[in-house]
Length: 394
Ligand SMILES: [Zn+2]
Image 1 (tube, rainbow, N blue to C red):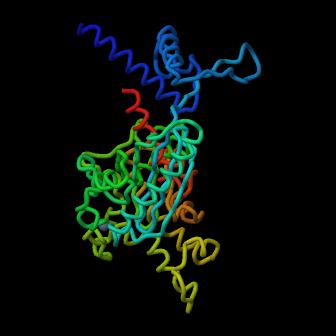
Image 2: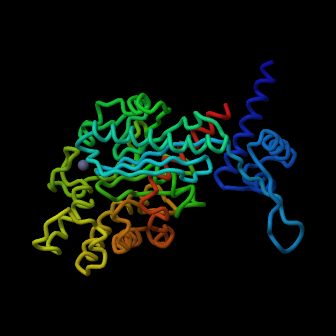
Image 3: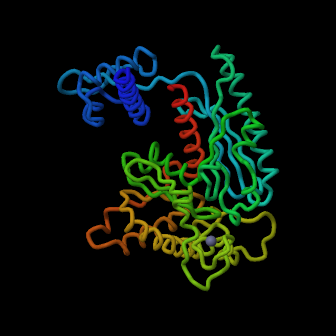
């Protein structure tokens, strides 16, 4: 009896491993699965057949030309349904609903003071989720795929999270949010299962799976926007730390007697490198102008602005060079609003290369996020999809 259940557990683990690999990579051949997962040919054949029989995989003839018969490739087959992703910034929020193949079906964005007015932000998020879910479910119904097919939501939050409590952890960063049972509250208002993650962790997941870090399993992703945070992937797995605060590099101290930071310390990286700081340094470039506050891209090609972006990039790059010495990543991906300025990314690259140990200076690739400003939202959809599919398997 005990032996049977052990054999069953092993069989299910192998099935999940094969399915996970095909879903992550979009397709795989049987020989690839044998070599990457270290499974024998009969094992891969049996597991693949089980997944084909349960409609979790489908098979297509490869189109490769050349020697021999083109290989048959296994492709993921997704059940009907959709997931919700939420990207909470400090001053905006975005919501998207996507089917399990991550095709976005509906999307909305709102400019809200997320930091200062959590109640209004929460109401807006809940309202947008309900509206978009209704739209997508009506569409799925029209195609005969039923209702109640949207069950899972992941929300990315721009601050340290207490993973166990599923809530904002810091009493000083996003102070108004720390007392809220954010996941519980959102779940109650939308009827969905809601999971939270740090926004930079979600950006890292998206760039690792679909973007600039695809194929590299040691990745640092940095979201450089109103704040600075990093998401870490080590040996293919996301790193959250013991309490969920891994990668909070925005509060690395740069100068001991620097400006006061919102976290309560002085001279943090965020007090020098952030969208607001850069806009402040560029204020003299549009003297006497009133109206709405400027956006970073308005300055992108100004020669003085380029210097300011480059210097900010070099400052962030010095912190990242230390992190590279610690973690030895293959890729550093720069996301967030500031990554839209080439001079900023060039400045980071300059510091990372200059401070790397001899022989390692050209090993780390520094790239802007391939998914641009959508990385965090795509990451929340990806994680929501993973969670929903895992729940459907068990
Ligand atoms: Zn700080």
